Length: 114
Length: 116
Image (cartoon, rainbow over all chains, first blue to last red; front, side, top):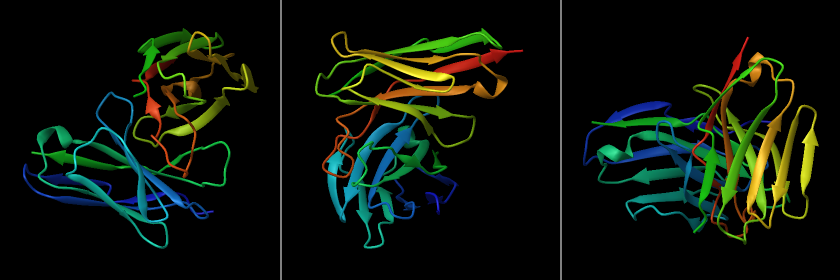
């Protein structure tokens, strides 16, 4: 069983730039969600994708956007980067058929905005 | 929206002793309460979860209790070991994985330190 993989693992951007983060979901999972984890904080829900459509969103502005592809992999795009966007971005996959709703997280992409 | 408060932020216990971490939530519609363990530089991993139709769940040295009336739930770790040292996060949601979801709302975490 292949776990959740994310790329890149680390990246540095400057204010105003745009970034794309990528995630491959765990084998057999059709739902992907993204979380932002600031240093010393719990993860915060950004949005969730199911059947290639966004079906849930947290309190994040529209400059945070995403995609899900037919193979269930996903991208997170952030435009007009701000210093406060510096964080660990976690992708999590799950299966809509599972009752438990367990999320399987990737190792994350650490974004630094200068 | 949901708000989850977690206490304490840091907990230091002697190896072999028990550790208890407590969380409260605000949304009475929440019905799924997982606990995640995150070691330094690693991904969060589910260690135990509970649904609102159950008051207590146990898995070896780990147990979770839920009081829906008071809107609080707790993690209990007995016979703590050095490998239990990590940050623990509680979370709450309506548990609709893939079927339209508000996602998990996490607490701010508890840094558990096991003293040898």
